[in-house]
Image (cartoon, rainbow, N blue to C red; front, side, top):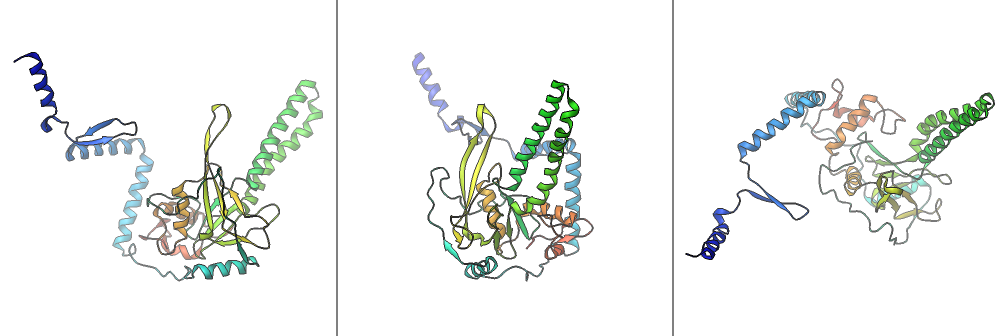
Length: 346
């Protein structure tokens, strides 16, 4: 047999099924692939090893997980965990009824907003939560969920604070340079007081700078503006547009951007369609769908929000931190453990 025949035989053997790599073929985004061929015993052993290592590196988090697990078992044994609670506080109103309620609260009728066409903001985000683990994860007490905007009072307070910091620093440098530190000291002190004052001013203004998604009423309260007050609107009438990634100059950081637009406009307050820029860092499709899912009273509150509910229960404040924790949600938490003791929060 010639050398060419030997090479041909070798190539044919490599193409035989029994010579193909064993295991599941995993394709990567760059077009390459690898074969995952671990047995179940090997996978379990590696998983156990990784879990043991994580517990050693994160003892506090591991202890918290064990504590919560023990509490959950106790709730099940006490027959609390799966017991349904009354849901009378949830609204049972249709969209038309909630729209009429919003108009009554606003003191005026709505008009339909014109169609929105913008190359900068693209198409509205999907409103469906495709993955149950997706959610906004914070700023929720079970009754309301809040979300800040970028172009509002809080942003301006940061700008004033930044300006006062640099102004005070320049006064100090000017005093040291001219040798007249006493003459510049009062001006530097005023700038410092302004810097400190903005911390307290921001705490006062922040509640007015939030979208408030109220699950129990099915309405959203928009943020205040400088020249017009907030208003109520059904959550179905708000669209969220993704604006892409905004990059800072000279290769700095990059942030997602998003805009909210109301599909109905209050006749009394607005000449133009109300639009709001999303908080710094934008909002993803999963987060936006998570807010809408939170407003859907046909499904329980996403489990990812339980930790936030427990946090505000411990503080005994609502998500805005302007009032007490909602009474309707208290039966879902254990007063001693400060932990959700039900399978679902409604």
